[in-house]
Length: 139
Image (cartoon, rainbow, N blue to C red; front, side):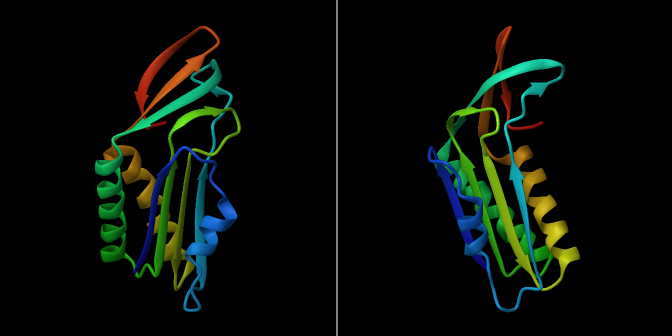
């Protein structure tokens, strides 16, 4: 399986990340694009600030790819996450997965985002119109 992992302060190019996992044997490419929403639990979001323990985050992202490859016939997987200050509408995370069939791709992609939110050391600070709060990257 090919793996593409990145933690960056740069904007994420969804099309370029998707292109990384293209494979002639793939019948499906599934892509999850996380976006900064304008409202969380009834509070207006001004911006988010992400921080990561980068070396550990990359190791955990690699582990997610390996585990997904053990469960489904993943041909390639890309896991990209931004750090720094993001505005409403910005993209903090992109996961792209190529597999022979769509069901496998959907499952592997969902596994990757769900596991990333549980295990990867990335934290976010939500800045609201009426205050701020540090939380993990969980929804």
